Amino acid sequence: MTDTLIDQLLAEPTLDDIRNFHRKFVTGVTIVTTMDGDEPRGLALNAFSSVTLDPAMVLVCVAKSSSTHDALFSASHFAVNLLSREQLAVAKRFATKSSDKFAGLDWHEGPTGCPIIEDSCAHLEAEISMRVRTSTHTVFFGRVVHARSSDVDPLVYLGSAFFDGARLEPLTT
Ligand SMILES: Cc1cc2nc3c(=O)[nH]c(=O)nc-3n(C[C@H](O)[C@H](O)[C@H](O)COP(=O)(O)O)c2cc1C
Image (cartoon, rainbow, N blue to C red; front, side, top):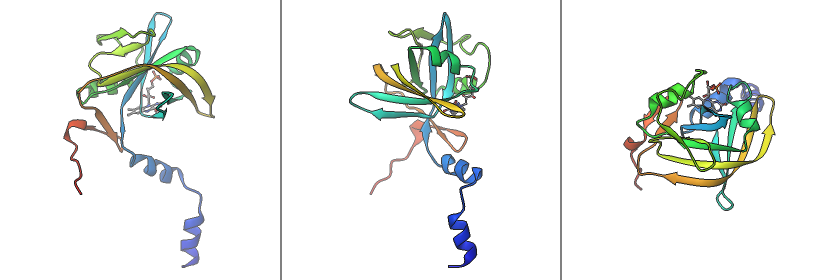
């Protein structure tokens, strides 16, 4: 092995190395919502994960620079709306800082009061149990208190592009 190759192997990852890693990770697209007084608030988010199934715990990771962040931080609950293949426009709308992302959108308050977006392929509501601050983001852990899903196929996100979750080809052995 050459010295150059060894240097490359030992080098700290660059920002591009990290970005390129994440670009290979396939996710769905969620809209994380909460109420800020009477105002529905939300943002597009793919830093969502199941933490444990039993007890049912999830986490979402929200940038402190998000205008939804402070409302989430003071909320008791959040909802995770998992978008369907028909909801690309909703994903794009909630990836902006528009002041009224809910205008003209069909939604209702779920049992905890959080905004549930109609025609999402699944949604859950969680009671916030822990808020972990990092330098740029807050990780919100939540205990799932409601969850519903439908047969509608999801919107898929990979490498900054959106895909149709109904057109995935299963691999056969
Ligand atoms: C597919 C996708 C995934 C995103 N994931 C996250 C995320 O996990 N966390 C986050 O803070 N922002 C994420 N964003 C960016 C926010 O949606 C974006 O910054 C938005 O403008 C925030 O709106 P707000 O400032 O009104 O809250 C994502 C955007 C897209 C399109």
